[in-house]
Image (cartoon, rainbow, N blue to C red):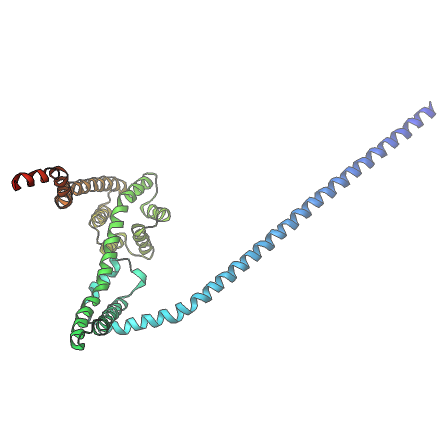
Length: 324
């Protein structure tokens, strides 16, 4: 019995030793696999970080090259051109400065032009047009120099007002864009305010979604309010900058509602419906004027063609009858 028990103990010990060796071997293999996996991920992360740094360096070099290319134009040519415009603008009387400043604001300050820059541009346009006219008439048409000079002065006066036409077209285009975007903007503001957002946050969200002259003005209103300007004053400034009748009415109603403590949501609903109705009435009015606009085209182009088609075959018979 003692021999059998000792033999069983030996076998059991060997089995336990074999199991321990297997467990240790499996644990070693698993640890080695985990180590290799972590090492591979770490190296892959290093490779990605290296590629990202190289890409950033390449982008920075591209940006530096682009900046160096633009440096000559931005630092030399543009200041020289602006200084020339400013010097030419000082020769213009200062009585129209406020009007031109207001027109530049309504146009959205194109090219960041100041009033003195616009005046200088007008002087430069007048001088260029006058000189080109004199050279063309005196050299190309062989006109006497005195007559060419008189025509050049007249052309210079026309060239002086060419920037005004350009500025007027920019103002008209910007007003049309603001008037076209206002109904949709009011609908979006109404939806956001009904969802629980404040009016200022709704304006910012609208500016993030859209980029047009109207949202640019809304963004400026929010910036002015953040700088400490009252909402009524910021809205009033926006109405003066844009000079759009629908937007002026909307801002006046908002200012009055702010003073009386009326809910902004109700105001937005009412104004959205009214602006949609005005837009529909305007479309109906334009459609009603179309027959009058089409009448000259019909008389000058369509009626002669109809007469030629209808009466054309009868003309030879009439000529033979009256001729005979």
